[in-house]
Image (cartoon, rainbow, N blue to C red; front, side, top):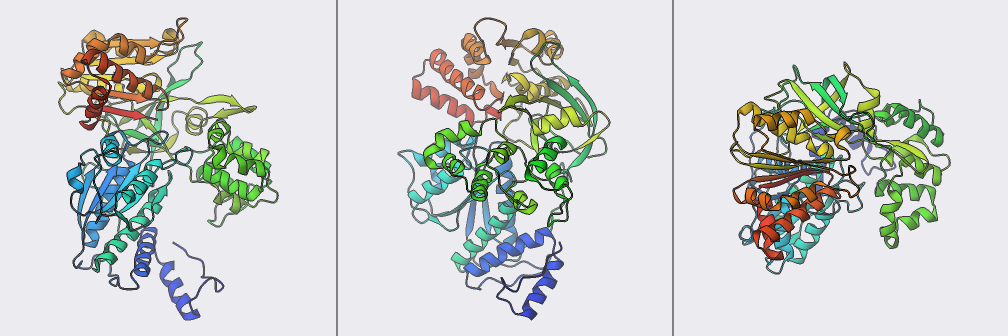
Length: 602
């Protein structure tokens, strides 16, 4: 990693020190730089008392380091991945470490003073991950434990395009302090490009725990670990370029929707996946949109950034240039010095903010609140990195070896006088075709998995593209010759144009693999009917399936559908289980805690 010279005006170092530091930094890679930032932060916090760094691979020693509990709440697996990274780094430094899922955490786990590293994601508009609901309610309830003598640090994961960005991280951080625990490091709120800030934060927190104990940490090898058995070298940072084998529109003529079935080759990649996993697609922004953006900013396409990239290339592949986030708007309010934009961002206008942002893109803000003489570097620094998009995998690796299938709903709409396209769905539907290669990686989802026993009944609720993982589930069970009962609730707008994978579902029903199929086509009658309505109609039988051990799955829209299905499940437990409101809520909560009720919502 090439480093520029230290600026004399900003550096307290003398000339010889600055030169030596430049010599060292110039030969470091990113992992080494990340370790150094955490090491120096800990060194500063400890007054210079940490042990000297040893070379990677040198014998590791540590003295009297405290035990650490890494406590995590994860919906899709990102928070779990950061927690596992924190565990691994702590072990490498010489700590004794316990990794604890909030799904398994009880009051007893907090009985004795504990050194906590908390990693938690936010689900939807400020909710806890499904598997963390019980623990969240425990620490916020009347029986919450006193935490005097405990220490903690919190890392929140979220998406700054949501108004309740990292809400769970904020709430856990505040509540643990209210219960008497000592905060040993500031909370960090991580956006979709969380990897590097999370790495640096972990090192800082570990150094702080060592400093508080009066102990020294062992120097840890920062080299990238080799992929373990069953894992791949391909990742978000190093995606595999998969060839597009086929792309087919699933909707018939006359549909208002465009849903694509896309098949990709994994040949020679070594990539494997399980039903319930997602595929990360690394997209590019629409070239026409980027050109219009640069024109409105009056920035030349060939302007070179500090990284050496030309600004147009960077806006195509590196930066989020459509979705509005509060951090971007706050920066733009500062640059434009516009009173109306500052008002929209104020606490008093918080309710208005969500409606104002809806349907607007960055280009609309640039038009409405212009900034004169803006340079390319300042603009790109206001943007966040372009995140990959995750799609529920619609195939079984065992049934479709060396292939992966996706079900993609193409996003197109009009808003504020301008046609809008989804970034990744537009990329997949308009800018690539069979024979092209696109960058992808497998994103594991341990919280959306088939029952271990193929004889266990399954109830699957998947309207629209939410049906994708259930196609994978059924392919897997078909390939395995499974004898468990399977029940699908599917919904969309019209039977004749929008019954996705209709022939496959009917074939599985004919074979007896799909025990029940209930559909809800909302626009085929005067009164709209949805999957939750079909659930209520079949409530007695659905409850009977749950009572004999069925697993219940939901995939699709997390803003409305998933909440409506959840409410229907509560209503069914009350009506057909003879439970009062509190008991029904506990019944559903128990399903979640035991991972018999799993959701993949977005």
